Length: 527
Image (cartoon, rainbow, N blue to C red):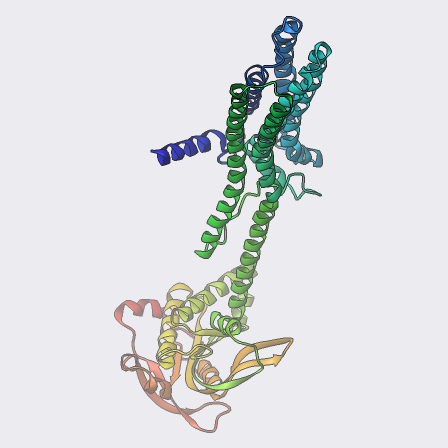
């Protein structure tokens, strides 16, 4: 039952007082809270000076005119001219939040100082009241002076701090906009430690001191009986409980909401969401934590952009290898399959068409190659003018580089004929041992492959430009591929490739299935 009551009170507090969706709290709500708190303070003072500390009597015939005329007049003036009018003026300084204009340094300062000013108003009014009534009642009898100084000082301190915490909570949306405009030159709000200390000191510590003073005066003056002393202690204890609980609850809420937001955002980042951005609404170290989180996420986003750009330039596998190990110049021998693609008649293509159309065609041409190579986990080692060098088996190994290279060559030829018939291309495929690694200097290097298979693939690409399907492979790579892929190729004659002394047996793809014939027909007229 008690737990249910606590949870109900917590939900009510959150729904009524906590701003949501960065919507500003209306002035009537804030004015009502400040006024209600001070009216409660007036009630506490009246109980203190009439019930808890009855002597001297405030309704004595010599001072009754003060109690019945001056006190109500001062309370009415304080509420109307003080709490309502001054509070309204302070809130008017925050109207910029609804204006479509950039914030000035003055606007930002007003947002940060608003809780302080709203707390200063009751402090000033309670101080004036303490001095005024101590003088008025003290002019009749000096015994009234400690009574009113004690009562007004106690209520003024406790209520001013409570008003500060309420204002800081309710004006959080305005603080968020101000903090979004930039970091202030100096912090204008207490830190987390100061907030926690103030909530206890003024919410509970001051009432405890008041209880000690009440007991001490009763023992020294001996002008209170046990019942009156008990009433005074009971009243001060209830006040300490109510305002101490409110102050500590708000201070804890101000801290917990910031920590909860950061924790939730960290979970989103951990799940891979790098687009989350925290709203900075706290002027303490927690605000710095929120701002630091945003800076961290921005750094992660920039890192991902660089990683993506790096992967696009050198290939995903090369980028992953560079991240996972120390970069060293040199290389290692690897068995790879090499695929070389080159456009037929690129000079004629460039001179016969507008530049914009040439760029569009080249982008479509390379897009087909990138998609098909990526589908089989190959590496586009480099774009050489209108040609492309593709490697399967380095830096990341694959189960059957020969099969992947041959299947990719057939898929590229099929898609180019169907999707980019304007760009006819020759494709050469070979396999063998190459030297794969980083070549260059420590300041600038690139991952590449060097060896006979690269040269053979380039020479086969030249010969393939005269073939009907535009593809030639070495018989050696076809024979090393998986059985299904071998059925897609026919072995042909042996030729001596330019720059090679040994004879190389050629392999051509078999006639495509019927649904591919139409697509391939567009690419058969090659020169």
